[in-house]
Amino acid sequence: MTLAAATLSEHEPAPHQPVLLAEVMAALQPQQSLAGRFIDGTLGAGGHAMALLSAAPQARLLGIDRDPRSLAVARARLAAFAERVIFVHANFDQMAAVAAQHAFAPVDGILLDLGMASMHVDDSDRGFSFRAEAPLDMRYDPHSGAPSAADLINTLSAEALAELLYTYGEERESRRLARAIVAARPLYTARQLAELIERTLPRREKIHPATRTFQALRIAVNDELGALERVLPQTLALVRRGGRIAIISFHSLEDRIVKRFFARESADCLCPPKQPRCTCAHKAQLRLLTRKPITASQAEIAANPRSRSARLRVAERL
Ligand SMILES: C[S@@+](CC[C@H](N)C(=O)[O-])C[C@H]1O[C@@H](n2cnc3c(N)ncnc32)[C@H](O)[C@@H]1O
Image 1 (spheres, rainbow, N blue to C red):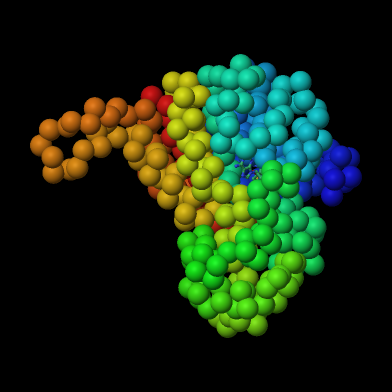
Image 2: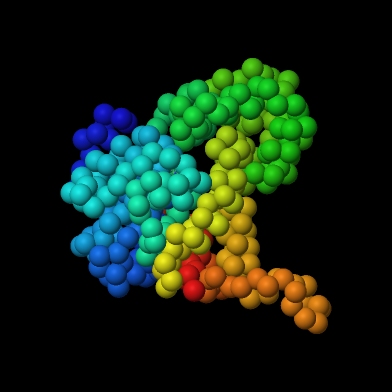
């Protein structure tokens, strides 16, 4: 993968298909600010970034990714635009500091396309896929020093594990599964865990019974919800008036955080509705452009099944 990434070019098939691409372009309007500045906090394989940079020939982009491999892929694919891109290996929860370091504010638009990329599942040595015989790692940044998925699986109590599987994976059989994991550990590989889940849980739905557990572990290992909570207020300070914030989420936990943040920051008062007079002095900083999230068309879902659960919300800075 690393070698392949190093030789990738923008002309080769994308290692990750950007979702809701036309909708993101319509939201960020790069053609309106030809020499604009944009931040892509989840650069991935650079698919959205490439479209932005192509649509606005003088625009500059600050591209952030927490995963060194993703960043290498993006660097190779965006080589033709390299003069206009600053590549930064960081967690997007450091967005304000990274932008300040590069004197890159205010900006015309910010994009977050949350979660993992197809490359993560395809990287058979990282533990994201339950089909691969790989160490249970799942860290976007393997050098972060944070505990891996194996560390969590092998050290958490059954109660803590059940809570994690229930909260982040919405796994209804979380207690039963957590007890089975504790009885079977140590577990070191993705395949070992997937096989244990197959033996423990009845197969009721079309999706593999390990899907929810793998999602839960990935979210926990990378503190995905925490990073999202931390970056949202920073985006307010970075986007210029009239600039846009576009966020694509892939499950209800993320989407709820974005929805609540946009709702709160687009309201002029946060007092309880029954209170006769406002005492909070809260002022709206955003205009909501999507009351309901934008979802993928049937055609996009047919071409790229990963887009099925994508939800795009967009707001404009007042
Ligand atoms: C869905 S992919 C983005 C794909 C990209 N939009 C494209 O078109 O190729 C999400 C990327 O965000 C990165 N990522 C996830 N959480 C992150 C965080 N907190 N900070 C920075 N990057 C993050 C992942 O490593 C992954 O490469």
